[in-house]
Length: 98
Image (cartoon, rainbow, N blue to C red; front, side):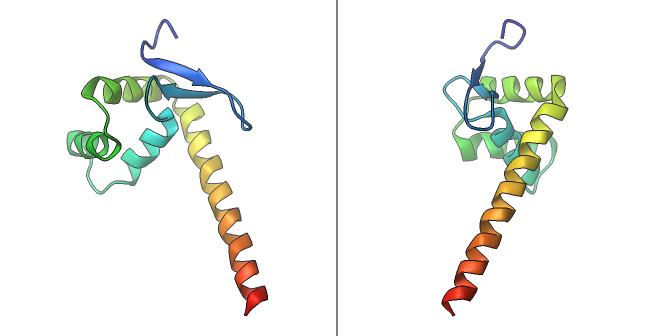
């Protein structure tokens, strides 16, 4: 945490996650950033506005991601897998009710 001021670590069912102090998990920010239409500084500004983050928080998240891309990309992939599974369960439930 000394090397990445503004980053805290939160525990949870999926383990320890890097997060912005007073903000979302880093993976959530990076996922939103990558999912947006723009690239570069335009994407950073748009994502910061969307998530109501300061420029400092944004730079902190980007700096952390640059240092640990595999960790953050793994979290993003796990979230996508969980979402896909939840949707598949919902689809099966809807089919059972039809």
